[in-house]
Length: 278
Image (cartoon, helix red, strand yellow):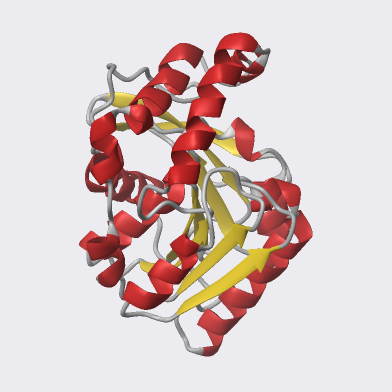
């Protein structure tokens, strides 16, 4: 099924869907197609979806001249539901089973994976475990490589807000199965067994340039995630710490985020890793 691009430069995405392992996943594409320009592939956060990227994909396409592909993972947005509980290695499974097939279905030729939070972790796992020559770099927004105490505290607070405030109603605007989306993420992270989550080995095997953006007011993580990547990764890791910014740099500091991403892509182009054509 189609995951094709919108007309070049269009602010409105072309909507489509792909089927991966029997599950229907909604897709959206902004800007030029893969035969015309490289593609920025967006992987959303733990309770995210296409719609919750808001205006960022269109701004990203306009700022970089790249096509932008996003999809809602199974259990999120308008994609098919996922059985609960999620396994504690759900991010590893997503990297193993879904990322490559989505790139295949969309016809992606050259790409930078841009992941937020859980999506950043999935992007790092994929690039650290798959020799996919289409992937020329990673942009990771507030990724998780290990579990920090602040992360657990933030997720416990999210549970409280989901149960006692209008958070559930607000998320229900975007997710066909809002309880599945939220509890699948929340209960996995708060399972005592999840404290063992650690993808340092995958980070150590990264072989493409990486840009990490981390807010210094992030309630779900600290700059230790960035420092870990700079210590462990074989490849160059550029880092930007954004003062006063929380867990969503692309929404809280969009100009700084777009500027950092555009500069990173320029560096890739200078080294011949990300030429303008598809």
